[in-house]
Image 1 (tube, rainbow, N blue to C red):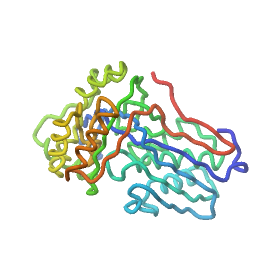
Image 2 (spheres, rainbow, N blue to C red; image 1 turned 60 degrees about the horizontal axis):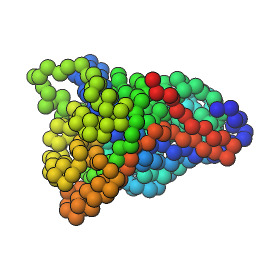
Image 3 (cartoon, rainbow, N blue to C red; image 1 turned 90 degrees about the vertical axis):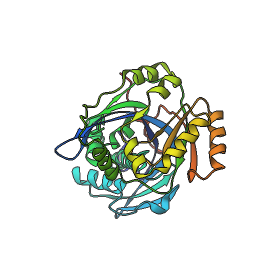
Image 4 (cartoon, one colour; image 1 turned 30 degrees about the horizontal axis):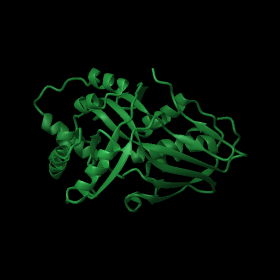
Length: 318
């Protein structure tokens, strides 16, 4: 990014949601975290983050679920702007405006994506010219899911999920996401996961060769078979009604169903968009979820677009 801060007063960024095709959770560490092996997969539900030069930090949120998103310093996007300003001695401030299409508190990393988008936007707005590695370090300080949003596409996450390696993926994957207005706390889900596994040997997490091979070859049926989430039993324990939703979706033609991340969103993998629409119509006739969103896989991560600056941040797959 080479444009000077004098040329740019507003930056717009689009950033996608994610689903975890696989989420393997290791034993609880001494620091309270868990080692993970997870396959992140971006889908074409995008939040837009606009960052404008201002005298003070501020945040506004519109769109899907905006009424439950905090607009103060507790918001991860606000913290991202403050972190960058503090870390690099920036005198300026910014106004952040988020237009949401990613479900809120649904296990799809909408808040983390907004934070990553804010980092990229502020880097451009303030003319810092930070490297990808530096942006990733800042992202990791904010949360485990934040670094993936910088990469997008499909990627393997290890450590707490913040160590990202892109994965070659082919084919298009169609999804139906069933949303509930009742949220699940991520710390509560991890705590329940630990409780359910108490007394059992928990192996160190490792990615599934079968899943990665299916993703590389574009084998949607292979992906369906290999999908897995170690947090799913905990999410179902805390919100049992999700089980009936998943079972009914499978009966109605989904290739597989899985709680997305820590939930409570349920992700149905479908053979086609037509099948996804048909399942949405069937499920919507019942009372199993509060809303439904269609999506497909996307190779993109953050897209930064400004009158003076056009830049797509991507890595090439290994």
